[in-house]
Amino acid sequence: MSVIPPVDLTEQFQTIQAEVNAAVADVLASGQYINGPVVETFAQAFGDYVGTEHCIVCNSGTDALYLALRSLKIGPGDEVITSPFTFIATAEAISAVGATPVFVDIDLATFNLDVTKLEAAISDRTRAIMPVHLFGRPVDMGPVMELATRHDLAVIEDCAQATGAEWMGQAVGRIGHGGCFSFFPTKNLGGCGDGGAFTTHDADLADTARMLREHGSRVKYHHEAIGVNSRLDSVQATILAIKLRHLETWNHQRAQVAERYSSLLAAVSEVICPQDATFGRSVWNQYTLRLTQATAAGQERDRVQQAMREAGVIAMVYYPIPLHLQPVYRHLGYQPGDLPQAEAAAQQVLSLPMFPELDEARQLQVVQTLKAALAQVGLKAAQYC
Ligand SMILES: *Cc1c(COP(=O)(O)O)cnc(C)c1O
Figure 1: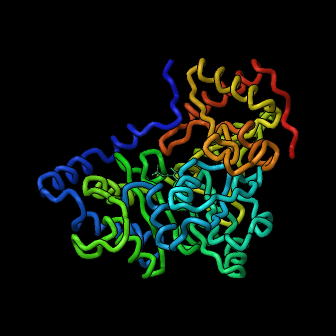
Figure 2: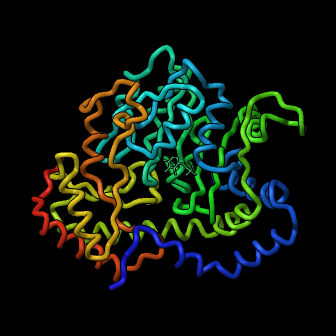
Figure 3: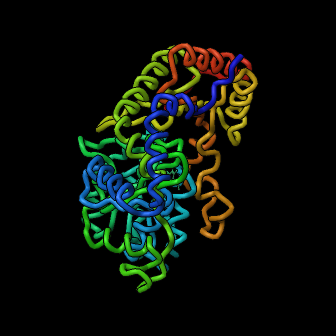
């Protein structure tokens, strides 16, 4: 029996192997490994794809978030509102610039920030809102932008899991003041290593981000700020440029995989399937179910995951502990129960294998394995809530 992994990057690589090998060989022969025309061409192409005038490529999605915040001069004493149900990098970047993350609860149906709860979290220290388009599903940006305008706040979109997603016909990453993307291998547009990008319409922010990413210098060996070394290398850029041309096809395939899961799972009453985006387009970085009967710190959910693993299907838990309850944020003083929807999500979620090349036969195997695991653990039908 072959194991079905959460994501398989080798199948996709085979389809572009010849093209990638030739392009990488050209870069290696060129001797120009950092900056240079290959990197600039990709940055331009990616900015065009997102629809912003400026695109600053860098070392990772985490660095893109950091550079965005630094460019906005957000730092000690400032607060940034974000989701507690995301990868640590979102809040980590806020902390890395010296600001304080303020967590607002999510909407369990979408796993994204509950936009109706944002306003109550705004204080006189709030400088920005950082919505996360989690699992590839766009946040409802209308209320976010309206609130930000009214309170004079910046909006930095964490688009790490959502390259190609759209809200009301606009690509994510061009709606707020800045968009931050990750090219980590498992993201929708992933390189063969680390990489990231910061997209913006604002020339000043772009200029500052470029300066910060090069050790705080615009002119070599003239340093005007404490910056970082965060560049995308030419090998990654040439690979990403090739993959960008296939991204629409791959995102379309992901949507088909999601649709097939939802129809195969329609009669499985123990789980609640993720819904498609209601005001845009989701790009399905993950297909994440909820097991609503899984309580008591997610023990039943963990047993379902374990039973599936034993049967050769690797499902994942993104994320088992919401950020407000992470040890690293204990000093912020949040208690269990403070953000109940995020805490419920952490106990209930299970992400099924998801990648563009996943075919119907393997999806059937995933669903059969899930059904057997649910029966083994004895979870009851979902209570729709
Ligand atoms: C992956 C990810 C990041 C960080 O991206 P890296 O390239 O791994 O640094 C930030 N936010 C979210 C939501 C992510 O999923």
